[in-house]
Each structure stands twice: as structure tokens, then as C-alpha cells.
Image 1 (cartoon, helix red, strand yellow):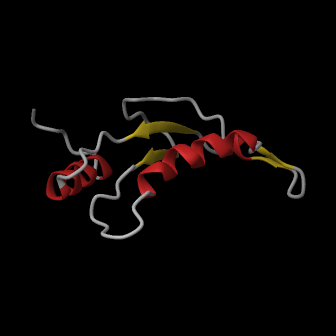
Image 2: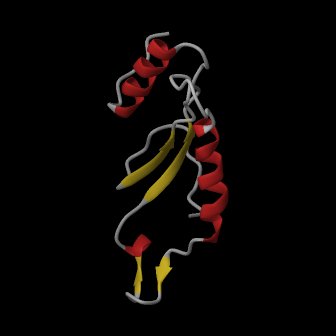
Image 3: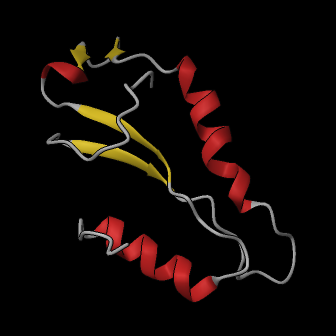
Length: 93
């Protein structure tokens, strides 16, 4: 959707947060490639809808947070990190 990439959470109406994670599967892994495929294909989307005659970004703001840095092979750690980001808690380094 040609959203601006903002690596630090900001105030907005929505954010696209990609989770390239497929460590827990045993068959047909590959879901980790979905966020990049969606981002690449969303370049074709336009903010203006001709049928509804509406420009969505006049009413709401959003940004692309990017991919979460998931570590393959560590399911529990990845789940914890995902939930920390999803609930906007601070990471203790």
C-alpha cells in the first residue's frame, strides 16, 4: 500500500506488522516468506477506491512497522517476542 516504513511504534490508526514465522510447522514450511510477498504485491494497491469514491488516508493514518526479528528454531522465545510487540510492552535487554 506504499505505506511509510516506521521501525519505531508511532501513533496511528493502524500498523502493518509482519511476522515471518513458520518454525512450529512440520510439513510445508514457507509461511515466513508471506510478509515479503504481501508487501511486494501491495505496491499495486491504490489508496483511492473508484467504486466507493473514497480516499482512505483522508480518514485514517497507518505505517509499515516491518518484519519482526524472529529467530528460527526458538519457538517459545519467538512467541514471547511477538506478544511483547503486539501488546506494546518494552523489551528488557
